[in-house]
Length: 400
Picture 1 (cartoon, one colour):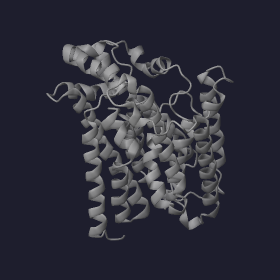
Picture 2 (spheres, one colour):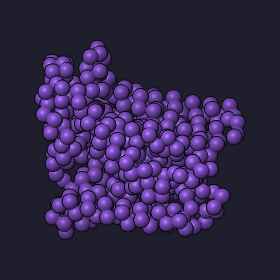
Picture 3 (cartoon, rainbow, N blue to C red):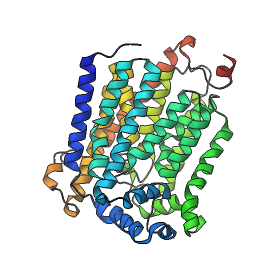
Picture 4 (cartoon, rainbow, N blue to C red):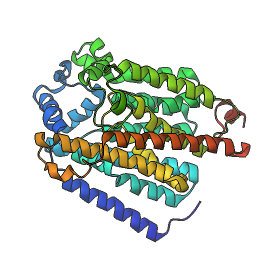
C-alpha cells in the first residue's frame, strides 16, 4: 500500500474544487428536460403532496420521484434543488469508483486520483449540473453493487442492483457483467430474485397513494413507448442500419440478449482466468457494448462507461487511449444533443457547435473500433493471467 504525497492530494483537491466551480457556473441554465418535465413534476408534488402520487404525471420509476418530493418540500429553488441532488451523487459515484480501484490496486494514490478524475469528467459535470439529469444516482448504486460484489458480499450487491433497477431501466446495461459472474460460480441464480422484490418494495408507496399497481410494474414499458426513436443522439450501430430494421426495437434487444448469452457461455470456460482487474475490464465492456447494440439509446446512457473508464485508465495505462476514446464519444453525444435542443432552452447554440463537422457515422465507426480493440485486449489478458492471479469466487472462495 503506497502513501499519498501531499502533492497528489493538493492536485486532487484542486481538481475537485475546479469541478465544483464549473458546476456552480452551470447551475443557472435550464435544459429542455427541466422545462418540459422536471419542473412540472415538482409543481404537481407541491400542489397535491403525497396524494399526488396516484396520478401518472411522471414517466420514471417512482423511486426518483420520491427524491424529488424531498426537493419539493424544501424552500430551495427547484432547478437548484434538483441539480444539488444529482451533484451529491456525482461524488457518491466518485467515492465508490475510488473504493473499487483501491480494493483492486491497494494504492492509496490511485484512490485519490480516481475520485478526482470522476468528479471532473465532462459528462459527469454536464449531466447533473447542466442538464439536471439523474444518471449519477443510479450509476452510484450500480458501482456500490459492484464494489460489494468484489468484496464477496453477494446479498448487499444484489439488493443494491435491485435498487438501481428501481431507479432506472438503464441498469440493464450492467447485467452481462453479473451474468458472467453468475456463470463462473460467483453468485447463485436465486439471489437475483431479490431484484424484482426490491423493485416492488420501492413502488409500494406510490401504490398506497392510489396509482394502479400494474401501471407501476409496467412503468419501464410505458417509458420505452414514449421514446419511439431507435436512434437518440448516440452514435451506435443504428446510425448505420436504422432503415434496414424498420425502427423495430425488438430486433436490437433480442440481438443484445443473444450476444450476452453467447459471451457468457464463452467466458465461463475454465481456461479463462479472471483476476480482479479482469472483472473491471468486463464491467467496462458491458458498459460500452450494451449502449452500442441496444436501440433507443440517449446521449446519457454511457454514463457508467465514462465513470468506469477512469478505473480502466489507472489499471491499464498502456491502453488508456481506449477509455479516453469512450469518454470523448460520450462527450460528443452530449454536445450534439445540446446543439440540437439549444433553440428550445436558454443557452446559446453557438457554444455547442464545435462538433458539427464530425459525421455521426464516423463517430459510430470509431466507437465500434474501440469496442473491438477492448474485447481483443480483454481476451489477451484472460489468456495471459496465471492461476495465482485468479480472483477466487463462489464455493472456491469459501473453501479457501
